[in-house]
Image 1 (cartoon, rainbow, N blue to C red):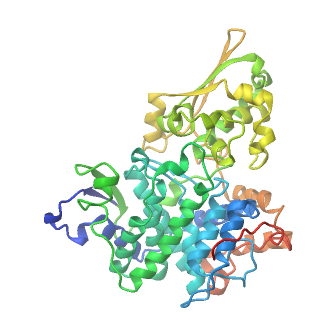
Image 2 (cartoon, rainbow, N blue to C red):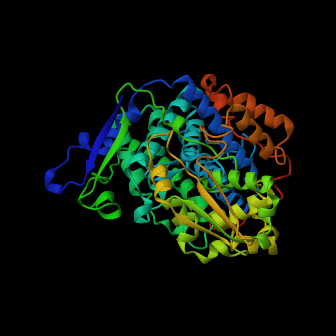
Image 3 (cartoon, one colour):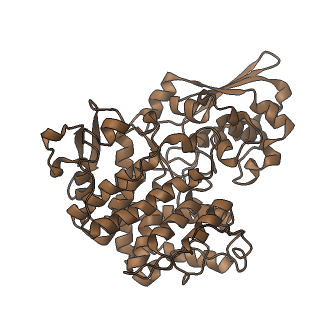
Length: 508
């Protein structure tokens, strides 16, 4: 059964024992040799496919070109055989922390992989690049990789259930540094003490402000989780060499909770698996059918439904106003409540439009769907009728949708809301949606065939047919893969594709 740990700030003179610290409890979970349940293993396979899908679609985008060039500026480090980088030949390797960096950027660039939202929000698939990179470097087998990824998901999602970061303008990757370090610890079979030190460093080095997701959003949005993964690899390396970390990192009077989160009087209830309990958190997460912020997924589905059923709603001449009644988070982060004029700017960056639900709803309504490239194209954002419709859309916080957003009951938890169209003829159109169609409780929940279809859709323009089949055959045998086969868990771009990509020069 799950054990809930009471976590509060302690004065230095209280001398909180390390066995009572959250970082130690996390390390105990990571060191627990429990096996991975079959349904969890199946879902891990799905998410590796999902990561490869969105990485394939990103292979020639600017941030990925830069990150890949940085990675290959560094040779394979000692102590292993190095790790693969998405798009490159399997024998073209780099040091694992740099592979974690390059692959992490590729996975996050399109904001198109899995998500988990609770007290905080997260993309727990961000754990896979650093854990896989280390597995390839040390020649771990598929079973070890499975166990490491299960831990990464478990720890990040349990922290997300309990500890809110965004309220204090701390970026959500502060939960990823500890989880990736813990997952690598599980993969390597490290002892509790070593993992404890790595978790502490993983947190200490990955706390940053949320300005990366505010205003004119930059390319750093894709780099932030990759940076956390890279730092997690380095934290494990230091801990394995006997180096120690600030402690208590969460509970100390000058620690993260006291000065970055809820303050010296704060307390959190953090759920973690009990000793011997299987790590099943991944089953509570959900992926994206559409390349957009997760809170936009259900709204895209509702918009395409309404626009298809009633094409008159697509014409701004018929619309007086559109109000999306939704959760606090959706209103203030990707809605008009953010008070970011960039969210209504047709010249805004792709990253900014991805965080504008008024824009996303307008385009999905008019187009009857969403495309990971075309829906963000400058000519699409600048279309006159779209801009007119877009500027008639606002959001409003609704207490009931906020309650459902924060509910811990999966049958109640919701990420959508209610839309109200006020038409120029005085009539109204009202509809609502709770969860995205692809959500486990949605109209068309994602299953293995959907993950494979998503991979084929995104990979076909950049991978050869034989490479698509090679990867799919290999990944679906994950639990039984040899160390050599784990080393082949990557995707190779079509000949000449990366040679034509701009590889900017830097310091390295």
